[in-house]
Amino acid sequence: MRKISFAVLLLLSSAAPAWAAPRTPDEWYDEGANQYTLGNFEKAIEAFKQGFSLEADESKKANYLYNIAQAYRQVNDCKNALFFYKRFLALKANDTAKPLPPKTRKAVEDFITDAENCVKQQTQLSQKPPVTNVPPDGEGSEKRPSSDKGRPPGETTRQEPPRREASAASKQPEPDSDEEDTGVTRPVTGGQPRVISARLIGGGSIAGVGSISVPIQPTFGIVAGYPIPINPKLTVEAGAAFTFTPTPWTDTSQGMDKAVDKTGTLWGVMANGSATYEVMPKLGIRGDLGLGALVYGGIDSSPFTQGAATTGALTMFHLRVAASADWAVTPNIVLTAMPGAFTFSPAAAGLAGAIWSYDFMLGVGYHR
Image 1 (tube, helix red, strand yellow):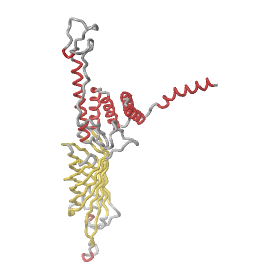
Image 2: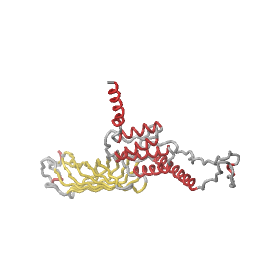
Image 3: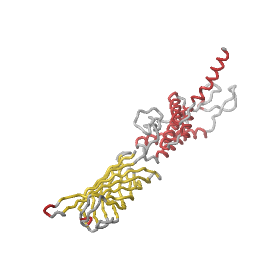
Image 4: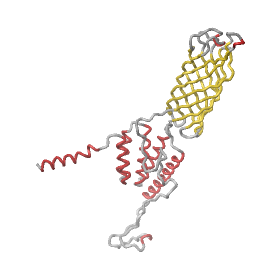
């Protein structure tokens, strides 16, 4: 019975590592982080590479590359560290949701400079001719190099491994957060992150219905969408836009002495597409195109309907074209100046004519 129990125990113990083997990207990350903390950098490299190959979320992949580069740097493998630092920066260049802060980019670029110098030194050492050795008995016609004078026979000059000078970047950065550095950086966890761009805009509008003009009125809008990076400078966005503009009018149907001030309301609801091109760091030029519906309410028996009664709000096709400039205050906050947005809707039945407007607005945007 003891032999059987011992055999079962041995079988279970041998099978335990297989049960505990990481299977998901997050589990491979945990394994890599643990091995890194313990100083087992080669094992950390393999674990992070496994996590990278399994990770389906593109927004997390760059951090795996950074962790791999950090581990290679710890074992003085300058060539591989250089490769993975550069790959990390290449992936982050297309990350519009969480771009790399300038301070962190500078630190990683310093790592790259150190690694390039290290690779150059190692290349020079590998190309150096070997020193002349003496025979084991200490005799021979060849002279030992002058650097070996005073050394015991048989002892040769040793070349020290290349050392990199300490730099301002010797502290390891944390690419995606300001938390305390641990040497490795954790990818975003907690499910698939959602990337969204939203902006709130407001300003003035010059509008009209047919030949009837409306004095400058306040106008407001919300534009939101999903940004899609095309290249490091060009980003397109697919989403929706909502606008609101009041149109005041005076009801004189009961006589001038009983005139009543009223307000019509223009509500625009559109599918919106945009393209933003970065003309210089932090400054982008953006164009928007919106197509949808315009709902015009509060105009019963108004001049806009030539005094005719309406049953509720009128709905018609709506087109909006806008141009703006965006200034990135932070990686997440953008200030918007929109010098011109033109809208047009063909006349619905009962209206005095087509509806048009020219808007000029300012706003603030948020990217997540």
